[in-house]
Image 1 (tube, one colour):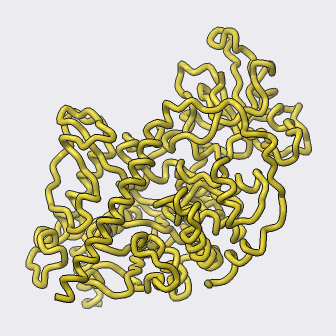
Image 2 (cartoon, helix red, strand yellow; image 1 turned 120 degrees about the vertical axis):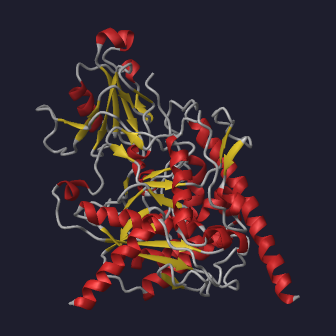
Image 3 (cartoon, helix red, strand yellow; image 1 turned 45 degrees about the vertical axis):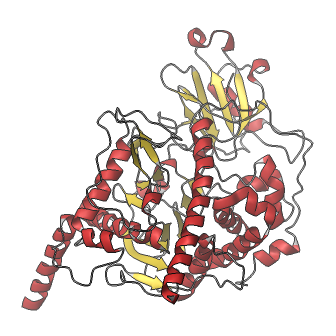
Length: 559
């Protein structure tokens, strides 16, 4: 009877958390869908709102302590960057004191808050427009500088806009897709010191230096992700094998960080570290189990002994689409930018500064639009940042305004604020690190820019004709939340033939391949746990893996 009550309570908490997450994701999805059609403000926000580059307050220091017609506007959806190569613009007239590089993108119009209007600012060339951006000085030291420019240099196409040079500011240019792009777009855009087409790993990747191995840590807890992590690990192993076959592989070890406090029946299948959940007497958070994650990583950095210098934090609902390189350039963290993480947004600034102390707008710009996953960091940086992340996340959770404003993603805000407090003032951002169907549709973000991770966080709804029906339950649908209490079955039905979303199709194929390969998945789905006996042989990549291991064991025995 007691165990029945516990199951009922556990299911109730799961339902509450799932309902809350669905509500949050509906809001996020609606915003995601509307961003492309949004009309962005053409002015920077109120110049009278002046931040002060003051020192961090004592409260913030506690958090950072130990374990206890050029379009303009804010960031748009994370979908595509410039298709043309980012060529570097140089000019003999540029100031010798300004060494910033100017990257140029033809047939592209970039977003940004306007600091100089092109209607009253005309120049003769893109070089002049680039130099104007470099030389622009705001009237107030805390106002935004120029880091994006947009120039119209084709007289036939530009007509009355010919020669216009718009100077703009965008907090994270590499986190936003262009406003317009393609052969029909007469505008040429540029960015200062940020190459929108930078390759993962930067110059280090291009020199084919010795592989910089990274360790993947996937945090997990609860029935909702219990089956997801098995599929996740299947694809990690398959892509690591391909990576090693291709050569110069940087994929190292993998760990499931299980923050339930007790072992489960997947321990033999998945390399796992079991850690404790955040104690309820620290803060009552039963409806928000995500708060266990920062505390889990605090324990991991204290206990883990790994050979790799670098770490990728991942989640169970990530599927690798291809072998994954180390995205870091040197020791600088690298991450996927989330359009809805906006610490410097005007309505968020005062909330952010509850945890950072009073800081300037320029300092707010330094706080990256990221969560902890997917994020690459050095293990050394993680040792510094993880305790701060835990402290900030608890403080955010306890603050009613922050809790309400940031909702289900508050722990992501906690992470990026903690990284900034921990001394990380820049994160390299890569939109093509991760795809999020159904909003992303193709296997490549742009030519030469393939997606590496598929994140299936959103529901996917289509009519049987293939028409996408966002916000409405489709005649064909897939949503991981359908399987929050029990693992999904094998052989999920194919999406409609008329559906034009390669990523949704790849997701269903990937899930079906993994569940077909993992022995006795039918029983696993029926029981909600691994069966005590399983006579099914592994399939797919697991069959190849078993064959490789058998040959290695035979060779070792014969040596």
